Image (cartoon, rainbow, N blue to C red):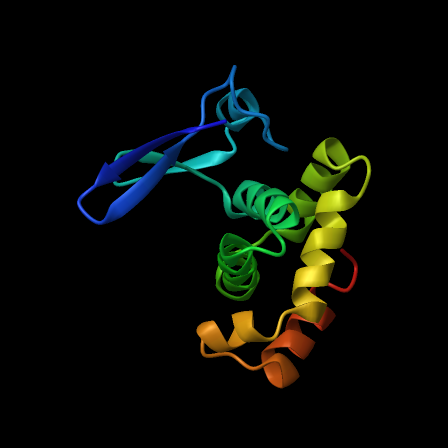
Length: 136
């Protein structure tokens, strides 16, 4: 339930407040200021993006796009400035059934190919992510 814009070789997904069924609603992204401005664009915070990516990964786990979603999750966990308190609060607010939390945990522990796409190793980087996010 989204729109898509293609600009050159870049695909942009556009989610609207009244059509999309996102784990973090579009209106909350704006009303709760869960975004940062980057080059005049409002971009979801890493924590909000992580929840949205986990929702997509859960829904598309066995597809090619699911692999991309899991790669994005690992990349966010490894390289973005994830604020643990903010992430835990958002999970508490938006993930009452723990499905998103479990998808993130599953991605950290079960993904292997996804680490390789990022030039990471499960044995080193995966173990580090498990330690860093053990209280997730």
